[in-house]
Amino acid sequence: MVPVRCFTCGTVVASAHERFRDAVAAGTPTKEALDAPGLERFCCRRMLVSYCDLVTDAAPYE
Ligand SMILES: [Zn+2]
Image (tube, rainbow, N blue to C red; front, side, top):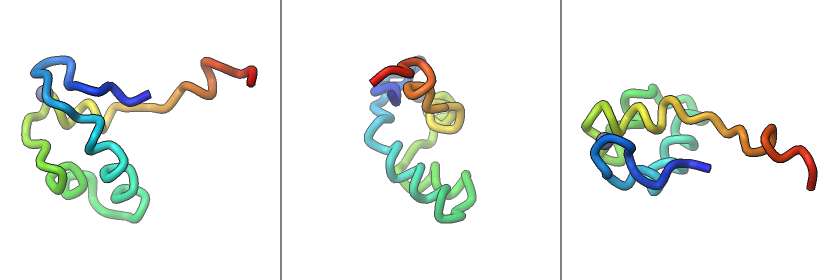
């Protein structure tokens, strides 16, 4: 699950996650994919860059 807000400054970052993920999957450079939703602070940018979806590993049983 994507963190809703930046841990450091509190800016909402979850709303930018899908846009960022789709842009990176389409081959857009990471810098441009982070600039597009307006994430300027490096604390907010690291929230999306360092995110790794582990929910399927944490919950193996359905
Ligand atoms: Zn931040």
